[in-house]
Length: 246
Image: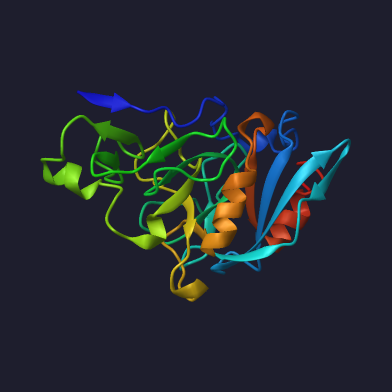
């Protein structure tokens, strides 16, 4: 038997139509927002800032820090924010990070435990923990824990623990997430540890220094309905007001 682990219970993972773009804004219950801004759609570099809502406005919780994105930059993702008609969308294997607004939460790692608030979910990853990236799999972009050691080639390919330090700690970004995942629109999008001290881009995830990632995870509070806003600077400036972003 395969055990199903439900990643998020927010329920608001549908992509909005462009006709609702003027009506979209950060959910009122969201009081924690991580903003990632890139210089342009083809940039693999990002500046990250964590904000919390204090009264009517947003305040940074500390200084900004650097991260890396997909090798080819960004493309619109399937989160909660609207996507313009005709816009380039994130696809499996395109080496682009998903742009938009996404719920975040749920951590995975090799360590027995990590520093986090008590309500954050954490899975210590072992050999039986799988994440499916095969677009032809009915389990596409889903997590499973097997009750046995992986046997098939598909199960072995999906193993989360591969002895890779960059993936020894990660936090989920709800792009194209279960139960509304569409095959081929991008899978396994996380925050995780960067490679080469930040000298290397990613396949679509957002990476950062290990210490910064640990600090970020420790600050995320599920009850604050945290979101990740990832956009090029020009796009962020355009939607900041209407979407009520920090």
